[in-house]
Amino acid sequence: MMIRAVESGLFRSSAPTLGSMRLQSGSLQYVASLALAVAIGPAACKKAAPEDQAPANASVGTPVQQSVEHDWPMFRGDRPQTGVAAGSLTVPLKLNWTFNATEAITSSPVVQAGRVYVGSDDGNLYAVNQADGTLVWKFATEDSIEAPPMILDGVVYIGSSDYRFYAIDALSGKEKWRFEADEKILGGANWVDGPGGDKRIVFGCYDNILYCLNAADGSVAWKYETENYINGTPAVEAGRIVFGGCDSFLHVVNAADGTVNKHIALGEECYVAGSVGMAGGRVYLGHYGNAFVCIELASGETNWTYPSPRFPFFSAPSIGDDRVYFGGRDKQVHCVNRATGEGIWTFPTTRQVDSSPVLCDGKIVIGSGDGRLFVLDSATGSELWSYDLGKSIVSSPAVVDGLILIGCNDGGLYAFDPAKENN
Image (tube, rainbow, N blue to C red; front, side, top):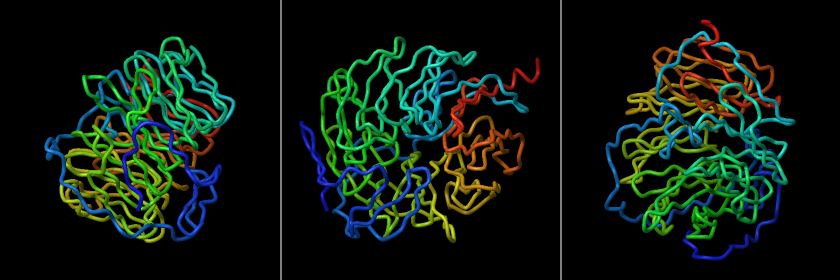
């Protein structure tokens, strides 16, 4: 098993360049994109690397962190990827505005300082006004953008299927720097502190590498190598970077130098195609082994498993005080007890749910492959409001100041505002 931090310089993957999600072991492949992939054969490495001790500053019992009320600067809203939004959310809602890209929006929007940023399958990163959806600027890459953007210190960071990772000035849309990887980048970025108080950007890639770049100039601080694709956005908490891979392992990496902290086997064919969430010293994630699990980071042991008879989980979790919410490819939204994994309620849709929920003001906001955006009661799972966009929703919502923003496969970025209904 090749797990190591690689210092400066580009790592050249020996794997062929493919536009689909492949499994390297046994030369098998996924034959569809991240949002629509279906596993077709075994691929997992079964032997885990020895576990190291958790870092001295590891946090246990950390409360769920909420996003700043007026911002949603990254996928899931915060660095631990909790999927919890601050503020109030009132229903019913009404469509406020729509911004139209030229192709599907499977990327997820982020929001900061009155602007919304989102990628599109047309290869553009768009910045639009939060108030009315008018275009501020667009930045063109050379292939589709499925990754969600991240905003940090006035810079938008985003990966593209053109094998490049970009740093773009948030105000002007001008490129600051770019980094050349060896494969496409479908997951979002996160950030960690570097030595001396500087910032570093971390993201995964289809060349099997977790990259850590210096935010100032895009130079490589370190690299961490896995044995298969990295699709999701890494979570960051207490000096650790945590993510799942298509190698069927949960990786826990030391943020300072990229060395392995833990390398936890999830089971054969338990490929992780989505993002994880962290809270209270535990990590929550779904995988291709048809289960959603909770793992104790200190011990590396599975705390609980929530199985699905036939279907995997792509959706990232929203982590409440005592419940966890996520979508499933079984066409349902699930709510489970955070401590035990016992099911509390499910909400049925008519297509798979790869969109990741947002918990806000006692409500769950989530999109479905059936084209509907739902707002559910977080306590009971009952439907409070829905809107039919007409095309599949893979994008995950952002919720800011009671405004819901979400992309759709029809190429639209939609904004729903409760204030419009009441005026």
